[in-house]
Image (cartoon, rainbow, N blue to C red; front, side, top):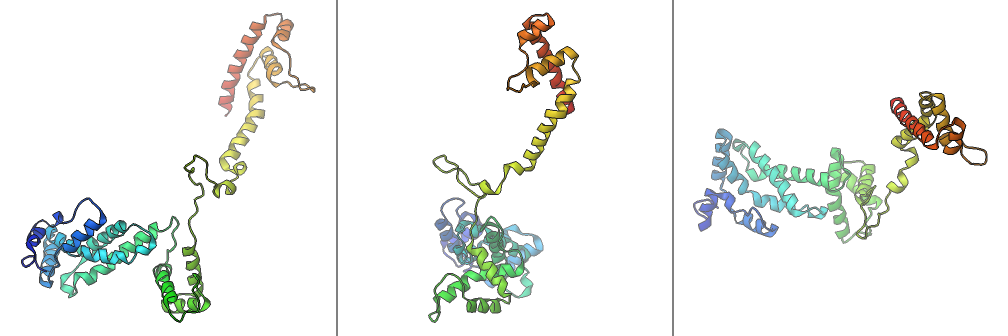
Length: 310
């Protein structure tokens, strides 16, 4: 359908094509809108493509993109089985369409629709591989081929009226057929089926709705006793409790040192501590308050020494 022969709204669409597609709203409204956008004739397509390629005419590029949005919707429907939002699939496909328009050469003698299919599928494939699972299931070319063919081929086996099994897992014969048709190793088919059958498990799941902590692998995979930070902190405490305390005590005069040792470090065989404030006061001929003041000053001095030691 050309701009000059379409419905009354067609000329308006070509003059201001973005007004036809709703910027906000539900997906059905978007799909309905893009399906009403006019298709371009071969002559119009080549004209707009040349304008964009030779003069960077963005309005011409916009018309090429808009006239093929329905193609993206059609292609994206084939990937709904992966459980990802249809709107996101369309959005990624639209990115592929724009890349195709940017690289399209009208002098090659092919229609944009044929050229754009590759770019639309490529972007949708990338999106699915990035988002289908938290952990990538396909990285090599062979794995990607398997990923996008395994599901459909398995369904074909199930739908086969002569199939001898309706199990979800592949039989040895089916694995051989798939490996032969896709030109991959048998082991690669088995590995990809296992990857796709497995699910993601959160190591540290979020608390449940009732406020209780959910149990996850992190509970038995992580050993706090051997966590590097905890080990380093434990060693530092041990060093501070021995060498650090000894170095800090060396900073005190003999009376202050004895008071600290009696009050905090001495433990008798019966489990009791050292001398009390009053006992130390009687020994040194001063008040208990004076002993407390000496103890307080000594502790402050030791803290400074420990900080410097650390």
